[in-house]
Image 1 (cartoon, rainbow, N blue to C red):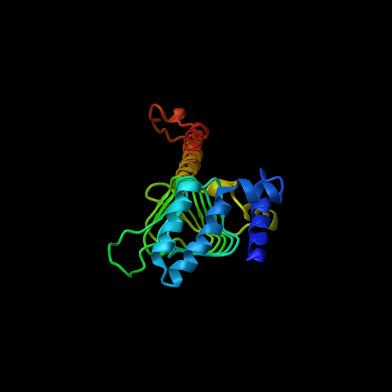
Image 2: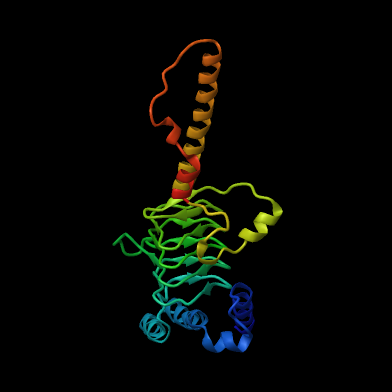
Length: 248
């Protein structure tokens, strides 16, 4: 028990720059308190002391603002940062080294008792503040869920999910330096931005700018050949740089 507690404290100090020392983490971090009390509630639940398990979970919610069903499975070194408003359902499975911020719900969309109703998080998943992960699917290892995203379908390992409903950005190849920067992304926010809609719009704008340049060269060649071509009014007002800034 004490070895796991030391692990938990060390992982919090590693991931939270505001954590100054082990004593402060042990006494002032409600996420850690919720995890410790959940282990007691889970023991009661697994040994058919279900009312005691639910009662410990109820007290935990009062003390920490974090609600974890005693039937949920929580891995090692899980960090619930700030934590107020976090809800983790009965059949949820949270893998090792996951980070969950305040206001997150790992919820279920099925009313079938005994079924897998809540999500499974692979190792190293980061879920940003206010995100809702709803359903009995899997969020792959090292995936990131952006703040306030609403995820209702499986997320591949290493991918990022952002928006409502969540859009999935598949993992791309990065240099060693970029991988080090992406190893832990606070609140699920990547350094280079991962909104797929924004990236698609940037691509379309750049493509339109390239076509505009190509058309200008064709018109210039036609003019040199003595072939007149009427220019439509307003074409000179196309400004890809300003459009790119609008969708950043």
